[in-house]
Image (cartoon, rainbow, N blue to C red):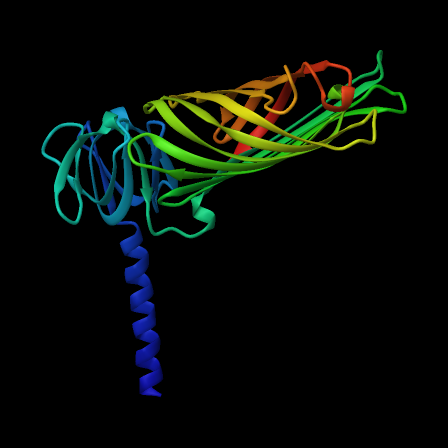
Length: 341
């Protein structure tokens, strides 16, 4: 009986110590205050801290003097360097000491673009957003529905991104316009600002006479700019397509080059504003003079915490569809309400 009681007390004490140890990170502010909690992440100039008294708070890097945490982190700088270690309080204003196995490196907070705890659960490593929009016009009897889901799982050396978008337009006729896209891409972070990427994607677009397109490929990329508010990168590679038009029953296989540019601008002050744009160019290597592209730009404006209003423009074109299909283009403007997590 006494052994069981002692065992239970030991488990309770160990649990209490574990919970306390999870929230012993200390943020020293420039006004002299300090906040203790669990450092969840630091990205785009915002430090997310989970506390007992104030729940989860976001702190701008301009308000932080220094940081202390005994836990291990993956720290990335705007020059592409990566460090693995814990964080020590620095005597220099707006600076943190990164303590690695072999050295202690002092870094200004504005030089750090990302701090990620290494020991986190699977679901804690996922960030993403969900957007939904609907509209109906009685005069023209047009109904439009749109949905977009993005989720990114990050580890020390890899990032896995899942994307699902669906746009449906009903003009009151028997035919319904559909534009569906689902894809997965895995990124391997390399030294400095380089990365390697493999991707797979499935597409349907009735406006482009596309019944389906299955696409897979690989490429390499480079971060031209990566700061607390801007990330601008480029990717080049090769992709293979397995596609079928709606107007014919012939299925074709094609090989294309991939040239892509991605840019993201983030305002961390309230209201948060997130603008993302992506341009992908696909010159065909197997169909003479074929060139297709996809472009989109989305602006998100925070209404309340984690709830955004989203305005998006998308466009796509194929000047020479396979199997002699008619050259078409498609574009649209979408408004929706979304939630980030």
